[in-house]
Image (tube, rainbow, N blue to C red):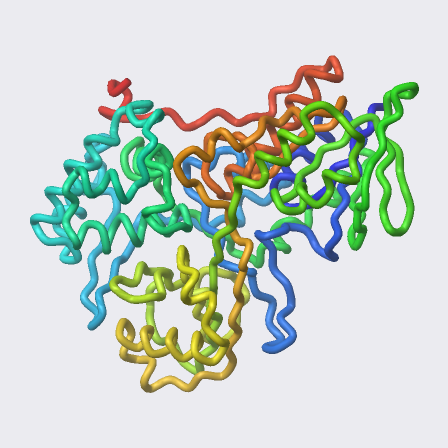
Length: 467
């Protein structure tokens, strides 16, 4: 049985590990932390005594490879799905976006959500006209693939209204890509538009875990052990050496070493960068280092609040015109949660991430009260602030040239991570795809071709005819 060492147990590493184990490889999954999940994980917060996710991670129906990974380890049923999105203005006025249905009547894509969009109070008629014009321009796959504009430049050229920019592009799209609109390449924004709003109602449905994220991954060690492999936590990898004679890798850690036929580096780009000097000299190593230097991380912040009573009956909402962007009612979303637990998420802003703890919490509470007046009658019991400074990598114009493929400069060593070339922005889907792509590349080199990548959902309705 051929052996594989996978360094990094985030979504990328776990996806690669389980796909390879299922294909008959003996896999050792190595992680420096004491838990699985990387940047998509949960932990017991010492300040509040509660298990919390490091940030709310949302997936969509188009995230076929994340769901493929979940199905492989038997937890797909732990995802709660919804097709509706509620937008709330300060003062409480609501707009619902989602697919139209009247009994068995459904509208074909891309018109499936048109009625709710046209009825949305959050947008003026001018906003709706400008958004419709922009979405039409982004509708055709590949039309903007070679654009070198930033999203901000493109929106100005397409004369988007202030309301459309602030309440849709800056909030929904920039939030999804976790960067300011001036720092987003147009092709990535167009991909989000097509996948989430146009291809089909199924592709745009939103999924959230019913359990803390690390609990979601509890089946990974069992899955690997049943196939002759395992997980090794709290293990810091310091380097690796290639033996041309045996054609094997020796991976060195602070507590020992182990030998395997193949290695997959499933690390964030800055962790990969730190490891490069401790890998063998090889043509192409410097080019990979230069590619990594082009990447930059963006933060995501979350504020976790426990009240003595319910402040809203909504499961989740988009909050308009304020610094906080998303509200998740975890007491309703996650099973077994006691109390009244609300999580607020702030995406694509370095300003909020730089605030002192008390100032950030106070701003979040003050803004939350503008949307949910019942908070004034509630008593706050516990609060936690989480700043994930290295949450996602940016997708500015030109970044694709700095996203390497799954193959590396070294023999029998492969790359995974959301930042490698997957065609997707920094998401769990990109991470899972990278793991499956690395597994396929490894299988090809081993002489045992694998099919791990889960196909995309095909466009439906009228979108089937837009090539």
